[in-house]
Every structure is written in C-alpha cells, then in structure tokens.
Length: 125
Image (cartoon, rainbow, N blue to C red; front, side, top):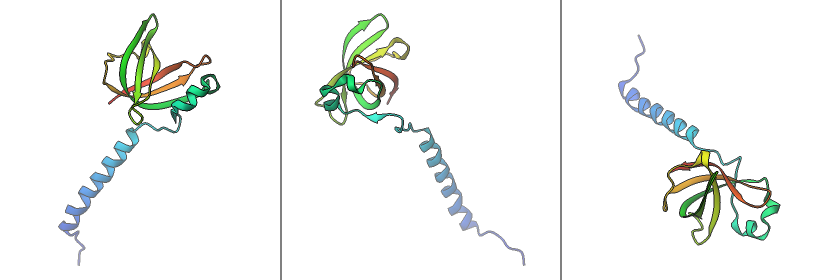
C-alpha cells in the first residue's frame, strides 16, 4: 500500500504556509523601536539639556515650516498620539524631502547638547 497525501490537506496547508511566510516577511521589515524611546514632551520641557545625547522616536504630523537654514529646515511637528503638543525639530539637508504640512512621518531624532531636537531619520507613511 502506498501512502498518498490527501489533496484536501494540501489545499489547507499551502495557504497556511504562504500566510505564515508573508507575516514573517512583513514583521521583518518593520522598524524596531528598541534603539529609540518614545518622546516625552513634558520631561523635555522641564530640562532639555539633561536629555542631551538621548535618541527618541515619534510618529508625527508636520504642522508648520518654521525656518529655512543653510544646512536644513526647522519644522513644527505634532505627535499623532498627543496632538495638542507641537514642538520644533531640525531636519538636516541630507534628510530633507519635500516636506509639507499634514504629512505624517516616523521621525527619529537626537537631543543635542544645547537641547535642540535634530532628526536622524525620517520615514514617511
């Protein structure tokens, strides 16, 4: 007696394997937040220079373009989760994209020694 694989079993298992593979592929492409903490605006306002050197991540919407500088732009952003708070971030020229109001980005930034927030990466979504 030869053993045959039931065709119904194949019909059920192949889509399952494809779904698991697709989920693994999608989860691998997501950015890990382990290297950057969520930004706490109230803590930053209390003592911005004490946070110097720290790296943060925020999902934000561009509010206004505040200034054009030689080496970048300063924009006001609103954290999507806490939209009542707007704060300024400097975006260096090498990261600059066509940034307009109401666009949403995953922004990673560092707090400089003087307390300025400087973007280290932008990912539009």
